[in-house]
Length: 314
Image 1 (spheres, one colour):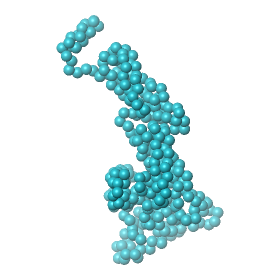
Image 2 (image 1 turned 135 degrees about the horizontal axis):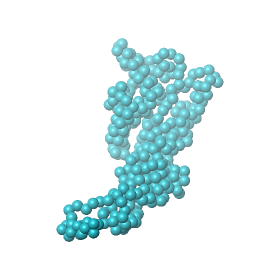
Image 3 (image 1 turned 30 degrees about the vertical axis):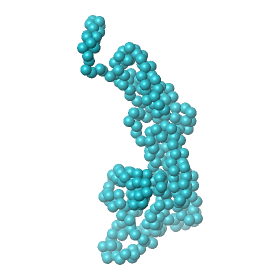
Image 4 (image 1 turned 45 degrees about the vertical axis):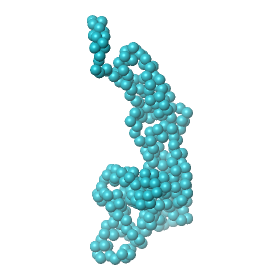
């Protein structure tokens, strides 16, 4: 079996921080994602390798074990180890200090587009996916080993998708499944896909939890289910009153501006915010802050009229 250098695959140092690893992974995953490279088998394989590397290096326990393996493998090479001569069996079931251990599989990879959770190397599955606890019957570790483990995977969605709800297609071991992400999801929302993953023979299938990551939006800020946005209002409408169009996530609406509106004044549009996750028929509110636009490059006539107004206030 071939040793995989996950640090090299991601192009990071072995002492890279969690944030550095995440930033690098996201850039590479975006560059090589199958949706961006349709029909490009090389990009697809690279994407799978990048994803596999991230699943190990982003998980503290798996990274620790991988680093231990790396040191052992490097030491073996320095001693003149020949191809095929490394004792992988020690790493399938034992730690370097001896004694049987159980290592849980953590986050699996990006499941979307044409890639699937089954697309992991023998190296990954042997070191992280095929281990079983070897404890005395009835021990806590043995009971834990009998129960399927839940897996998590981050899923990015747009702000509009969080408002409307959306779906994602996942492919696991050649089988496709469409997962519904409900309206009102926020960063950290978990969507359960029951019994989605087979990790080892003769063991129950594990659940997969999609952990939602909602992208920011340039127009709206979110606090719980309420939304906040800014609109510009010309001076004349602010002074005299009138109607303006306000963008919402379901289209523009008309907002009546009362005469004498002040800069920074906020108006509430009831029910125009994010849907409630567990009751999408109810929504938060949209708060609209008014920014007054002062006219520039006044004509001679406008200057004259403003001068008259200025005299009237006296």
